Length: 396
Ligand SMILES: Nc1nc2c(ncn2[C@@H]2O[C@H](COP(=O)(O)OP(=O)(O)OP(=O)(O)O)[C@@H](O)[C@H]2O)c(=O)[nH]1
Image 1 (cartoon, helix red, strand yellow):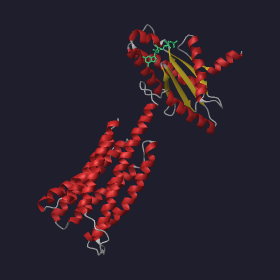
Image 2 (cartoon, protein in one colour):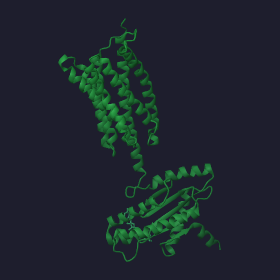
Image 3 (tube, protein in one colour):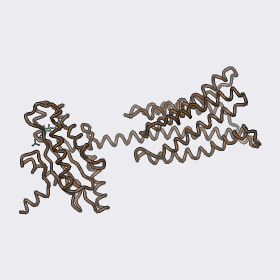
Image 4 (tube, rainbow, N blue to C red):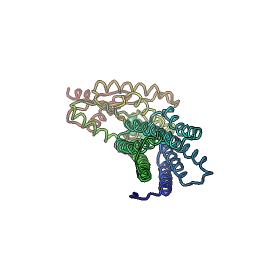
């Protein structure tokens, strides 16, 4: 009994064309992305997938060998491109062995089925095995999102793939049973039709999920650049305020400390006046890189504007901050020589240091560090002054 009548070529046409369309959309989205390699491979993968499916539209006997070859080659390469795209997207190294298996299994299936001439089922089973390897590799890859924003989408994709794998196992389990000439009593046309529709829905949802992943990454990139200083790559004032708030909440929760340092390049105006703004920019970039190389990964570094930089030593105290500030001060004056500016003296920085006391915020501590910084300037520059030393001096 036929409950529904499903026209396989029409289904193939819809699926092939929709995949091409989604591939074009992914291609288009790459205009807004700095790292285009991941989505570029997805676009290629979906286009190849579409091409493989469109081969089902033709049924002229003389075309069968070339269509079979195209279908198998395109299916294997499509899975490789999609997987490779996920590796690139997730900033992980590709596993070439897995790609090799996925690309070669469908071709082996094609060769064996032609040589043995038994029937087309063997060929289908080899292609399905390659796809199974692809889905399993993908499931494993989706366990490790490279940034928090995409974690939820990765979770949804895992659920989608797992559900599809159930259908996949059911369909190809039946084909395998037929190949082994086991007795399976199923209305195959209807079931293949249902599998065709499920497979269509899955592939389209999968392609749309890739577009969504790409959009989330693009918007996360925009958010990052709104918080980043264009010249040094450190945080800007906005980024600093956001992370400072997070650190305030953490200290409140853990009842722990942090320390802040403010830096200002001494007589920086002279550099601009004598060597021009581009040379001044070089000096600012260098201080940014000196700071970055002297703090730990979870510390916060920002260029607040002009030649003023600040650092939050997360979980640090005043004595650690003095050490770090001293290290940066010395490193900066040594490395400034490498810029080759014809200055009579080395370039130097002054710094103000303060420990963030209980019930105060990082932004309040930065104001106190600024006062210490200007005390360092008044005392002759090229030195580190702790806010606590000012308080004890004024208390005396
Ligand atoms: N090249 C460059 N210069 C900048 C930038 N932002 C601010 N400046 C310059 O930084 C200089 C700051 O000068 P001042 O505030 O007078 O300070 P200073 O010359 O460093 O003197 P002291 O801080 O008292 O040691 C000005 O000349 C600004 O034009 C920037 O993004 N690039």
